[in-house]
Length: 479
Image (cartoon, rainbow, N blue to C red; front, side, top):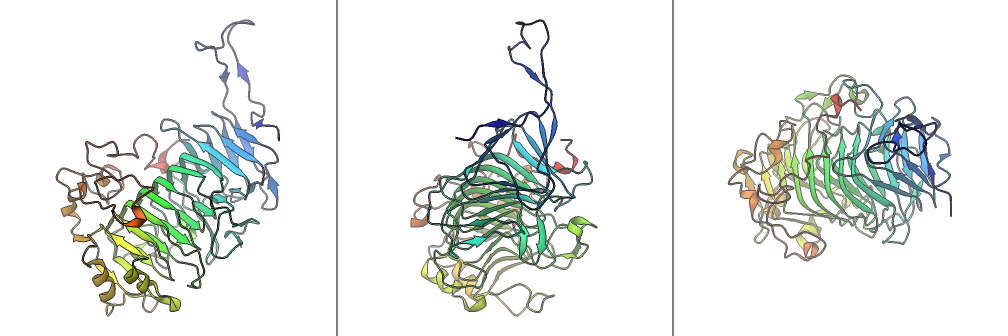
């Protein structure tokens, strides 16, 4: 067994009194916080060579590409701050067979954030967090995106890459080239024995969360003011996700099209198995209520001053079989796209019940339905696409779906104010009841709550599960 190493560096234990006296009232040593480097700034082969613990209350500067290789476990204590270095595009990569044990608490979450000063942080300040495993994907073995060395994929659906609990990732996400990005958090073929819950990704420079294959399940996810998609699923991802919040900033968006969900079976739209068949339940998505050409990205954000374009709450395409239950899609230019692009049969999967949207609300969207990609000629809305198939599917008998105005949802405040409380349910909200759990895809592995969306009524335990550990103003936080 490899020796466990605690990254104390030259941290001192300071005690008051003579030998044998207490160090403090609790008879524990007082640890002087240190700022330590993790990584050498290179993008080659810096590995954490033995089991290592990042110790609270130290702060760690993540420099360059840092790999947790096969057989090694990186443990991060509650309350630890890891700052991604901008110059070297600091990125943490947990490779197949490696593990990360990042188990924060509600009172002391673990925070991965920008090393830039408060007020000057931007999406894409550092690389991000990449976790890779040995679970199946529909391309067998792949090299993960983003310019790193590592592959993912295998046959072990129950693979264990560790724990992410009460973790925040802020201002990460880098596009190295078109369709070759590091996201806020990237999961590659991560297995179902991995624990993921209470995780917030804020101001990502690409997708907030992206899954390439794998079977990992998750609960209590927050995608806050990201650049591209909130939740992106590819290559046969088949996990279960419950209680998730996505919130968009109208001044931060991709130059092509930002979505709440984007889901493909794979990039070429093939019928390779396993299909992308992830099941999401109790999701609340709040878009920018923006005309797609109305906003310009904040100057210098992610190196872009181009127009921020927003597309759909759900963009389902390329043979995906993703399912969404008991959820809210609000304030996007388009509510739902189910698209047969690249010769796929995505719409047939909806007809056959392999792709499912049930017991969901559309609210305050500029256009509820569309059958194809939002951009018909690369720049303007295709006004001739009435979304007839998607509308018929959404309104089918037994689907339990509804179209509403934003105000009719009776939320606690303005959900587009980007401050927090407006996402909760107010008195008399129709979302307080109406969830359905009879479908086979949600009959097991989910909490059978009565409400629709990510949050329950005021009298329920899940009224505000973001309280105490989420941060909705990381730009001005002094870490």
